[in-house]
Image (cartoon, rainbow, N blue to C red; front, top):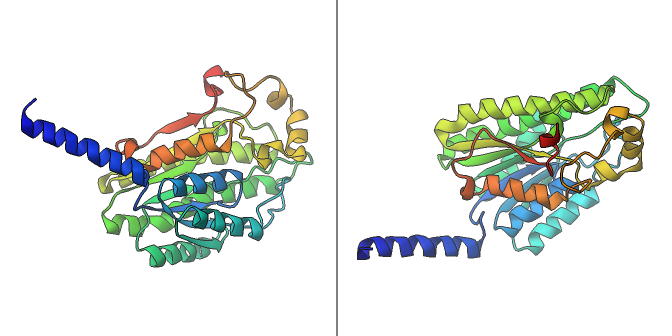
Amino acid sequence: MPDEARRSQDARGEEARDQEARGRLAGKVAFVTGAAGGLGRSHVRRLAEEGADLVVVDICRPVETVPYPQSTPEELDEVVEDVRGLGRRVVARQTDVRDRDALQEAYDAGLDAFGQIDVVVANAGIAPLLVEDRVQAWHDAIAVNLTGTFHTIEVAIPSMVAAERGGSIVIVSSTAGLVGIGGASNGGLGYAASKHGVVGLMRAYANNLAPHSIRVNSVHPTGVATRMVTDPAVIEFVAQDPILSEESPNALPVDTVEAVDVSNAVLWLASDEARYVTGVTLPVDAGFINRR
């Protein structure tokens, strides 16, 4: 190998080692919705561990049609302490993703504090799976999961485009966004429709934002061992629906995955390791979809 080529290769290797030592998101700022709950809190931790500063939001109060406990202000405070304990900076707001103006205000507060947003994780979501079925469950699922994702991306686009730095947007969907599951209830149908709907948003945004080097992808977990899946009310709902309870869901011999498994996929899509990955639906599903 010629000396010049060898020096170039050595320089690239040294740069990669330096980046790994600093973290895969060193110098970046991430905006994460639904940040105080199980999946969101895990995403925040992994991004902070890899060097990102954070702008985090969560509704921190109940949604009436959701049967399992929602995040609390105290849990959002704990997320802030987690991030600071990892040596990263953080801006936090109690914000409902259904309220676009409030979400814009929260996003802008982070932008004012850090001067940039490089990564958006549209994670906020609900599963209004009620044994006693109500049509409001449909409306809440669509409003939070689909419209809330739309709001999250829309408030971020102007500053990300203007910065001319590229970036990554990751939408947290579900296996219910790729196959026809969720049951026959209003809430289950709303969940499936909303999780399919964000895939359409992802694909459109991936094309729209590609000229600005902003990548857009979605992640599709099987059941995750968080309170949304393990709460007795949700277990009761699944047990009374023969479609949902008829068999072990995954190809691999696990009933659920851990939150960090999903967060590792989010981290990869957010990082420069996935710099040419856009418009992708990435399952983290222990083979759930492959069995269908």
